[in-house]
Image 1 (tube, one colour):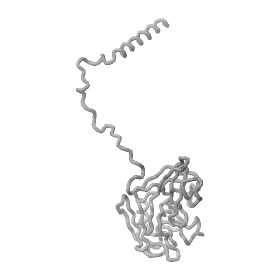
Image 2: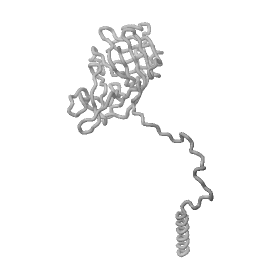
Image 3: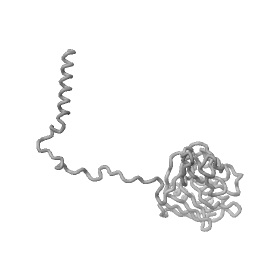
Image 4: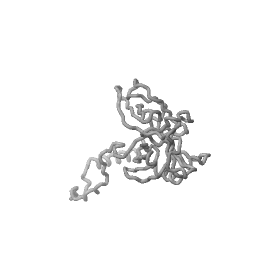
Length: 258
């Protein structure tokens, strides 16, 4: 049996060698590759790469993956500006807008981000490694404190607008560039309405409030007061409007208060 198996293996090896040695000799007589039909157009068409965040209306954000100190320049020797944690005061993931990136002398990548601190519009540089993956949004919310309006844009086109209440003269809604960083529901008090959107804005006057006086966008149990200067800095709107806005507005959306 062993001898027969060896003989069979040798015959198969020889047959395989013969087939390989024949190369294209096995093709039918008169075979012509030029007569084959052309391949399907666009079967695999890989276009030029598009840099992330290159769209005119796109904004990027990223979660804070580990506690980090934001600095005044993209270097570990930069002056400390603020400390970022991984969680917000409400217990949700802390996200920050990513504005630009740079390399330090050692080649490490740094990202300039908006910071949820006073004064408004403060930014700082953090190592890219301290942040998670980027999220991209094409929405932008504009709050006009004089006209008492909140307008949501997507790809530069207005998709939502409503009348709102803003802060009083004694506790104004801060002016500046902020972002939506969480969505909160299940409040025990009807004061906040069915849903609230937490932002990175902070009140310049109510710094001793729990969590540091962060500004929210929420509903209300007093729609009769809207529009007007009626809040401690938060942006209030009718419950049906905040529910609709929450459905249209993704996390990380920039908020501009004018």
